[in-house]
Image (tube, rainbow, N blue to C red; front, side, top):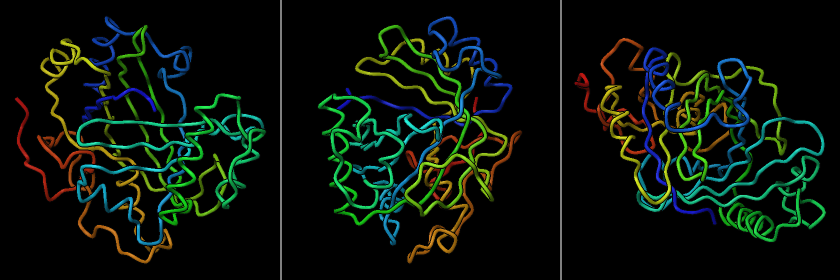
Length: 282
């Protein structure tokens, strides 16, 4: 289990993102995968799992205090490269993450219900195997299956001790993927958070004082920005082959556009509109 981590999310414009980049660069280093890339960003792909009733989706929408997501995180589809099976838990305000790296060629086998073997793993790390077994148990218990493929570009900054991390995520696309594959190519995705950048401030143990100063000088306000929830809401249950209808109200990003007054509050980690209080940040 990874150390307890706290995450604060904000929706910002590109103008604000440029100021955030300058500010953060005074305290953190550019992530090694961001170095030398256009806009300092690298591609991130995730395959989220859920069951036919979209139980994981609804736990997030309802703001359950103790909930989890099941996802595969990967960056390429080349044979032999790692696919990380992740259990991301939220225990009240704390984020806990377990993950283990699996070889691309073993992904379908595990998602189709076969327990991982040592030869399926990227390394012999026991913790990685335990994490994938935990993922497998939760997947089986929930009767979860591959549901949604999400892609975005990430600009990341990190401290030397990896206790503090700041990310800027752009161009969030989602489409159904009911197949047990870690695919890269998208055919007909929906575009969530269009015109916005998702700023995430992440820290372990102690809140950095300069985070408060960053928020103050940038005039940003905390809100929810769950990529999986937004993608499911935009796609709808019919395209996902789910039994249970998803939210019928427009998402936050359907209601707000760059230049509008941004929401000062949204239900934590969901982005659902009924819990917004619209007010100009000052």
